Length: 530
Image 1 (tube, helix red, strand yellow):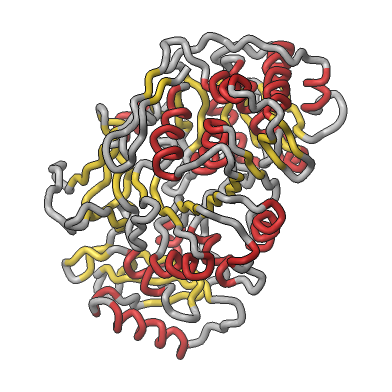
Image 2 (cartoon, rainbow, N blue to C red):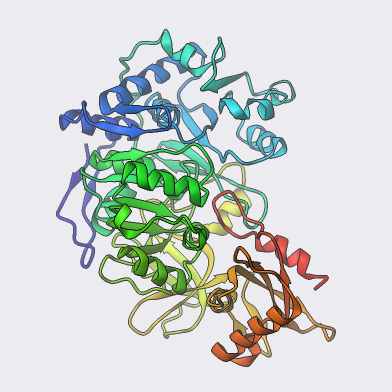
């Protein structure tokens, strides 16, 4: 079991002592049964409500079902499952059986899934019924794939049928803290995704270092994460954190449109909401955005991309609730740098989460000690992944001793707040001076016509790099030359003259990963033609 000392996010982190033999799923489920929460609602999805004892029984039945399929401990299964009760059932049941689940996003192509299945050599794929058509042809193409199990489907290949004949009792496999527990594929914002291997101890560390002391999650909370469970951020929000304290979680299978999210916020009255910057902006621009009086939110979080200052301020003005903007990564599993309740400074990512160390490194590999100088953010903490599967070169490049390279550029203010400056390859050098695209983007979205913006470098006729902006306008706004000039003038009035975008392209949407990260490498390719 997990032993904790008193937590205080302003001082030292809690002490977390785990036994050598430790199974993450057995802990997250078992602690709730031991605390007498068996009859409490653990999950609410679009089909029903499920108590903690029902979740435990479902996970046990799936663990037993894996045995009937011949899947053994340390082998892998791929799960492409929508946010329903089937996700925690499969994820926790596999972990309890010592099998390694690989949660992948549900919005990819058949080619993407083929790559992941071949790379991981997963023997079984558990797939939500609407996605089966995409996966079915892969069964014949991939030699290592033996079976597709359909979540939400009927018939012999259905998850329900597989579990119906299985016992609801299962003794957890005696894994260790350092055993591979689950994988998440990196989002692909910088190219091909990488299988990121996490160990059993990582899940509970995220809950005890961030969710309890920073987010302040409690047993009486109702949690709703628009960020999906296949996303490292969403996995913590909607599975690890609520299970760690015995809270209730609302799941939504459909895509998180402003209308779909508003519906759940109104119907289920969550107290904690996890979103991403794009969603917060879209909701504020939506005529049907709920009012403060309709909701009972007490905490909101944001990750995936830096939260623009203007969006944070407008959200707090509307709902009276702060957004705790933070940064995590697939490699570190969840948030390691965050704003705090009562100490939110919009436009920054806050300060390090106790239990993690961060540092900024310059281009020569030196640690930056001065304020306001950009450097690569590196992190040291207990939730760092064991490495990338079958990718020794990139593992060595990213995981360097106790430090994990984030690939993000940051600056640190004189009073210790960290400010996002873009990815390593996003920083622009204009007229010999570094320009953060994030700073320009934050200025652009303050214009009344702009909903979203992304800035990348583009060469002019003299092959000098200048900023180019891709703009998504708010509903009802029409692009034209006069508007473009007005937006440029707005930036010139707010920032140093060399930072304004020399070119501006209006687009319907920005290319993003399923987790909401802008795929700037695609925009850089488009920008070559200006």
